[in-house]
Image 1: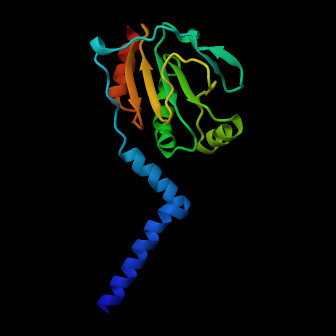
Image 2 (image 1 turned 90 degrees about the vertical axis):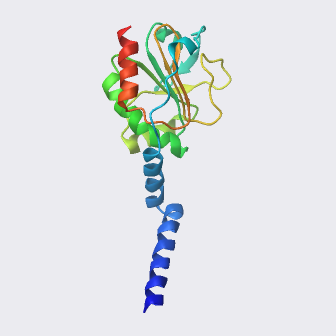
Image 3 (image 1 turned 45 degrees about the horizontal axis):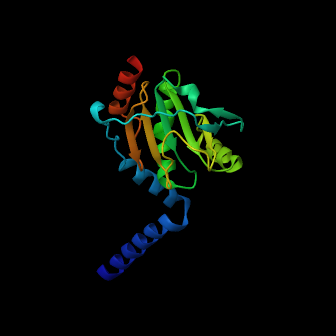
Length: 187
């Protein structure tokens, strides 16, 4: 009897583990684990912050129109490089959406991808994200270093100093980040 119960438990455990690789449950489970183990990003001390000196950076908006990053000079800026096919990017976008909902009038958000429009639009609709998507022009110079592997995020003060330079996933909807944004906006 004990052997049979142990065998059943082992089979259930194996099926549960396999579900992480071959079913939607696995995808949502991995997203959940990424979100649980993402933490608030480190903030760079004011004395150690590098500054953006060149704001001349061409990008495309959601309608595929060109614009220049110079329009954000003198403003607080949140830049996130992401890809719809990268699980860590998908996991942190929910916290970015929450931050955008509360700070869209005070902070310029650049949620940047180098993907084509159709998969991005499908991804946005599926996840009910409403933040503005910005498209990177591959090969053009940029004001900040574009990562090889997203996610990668910057928070830039009005004077161009980089307050956050975070590689990898983070939880952006935290009191620490909100306090930083409130402080940067008030200066």
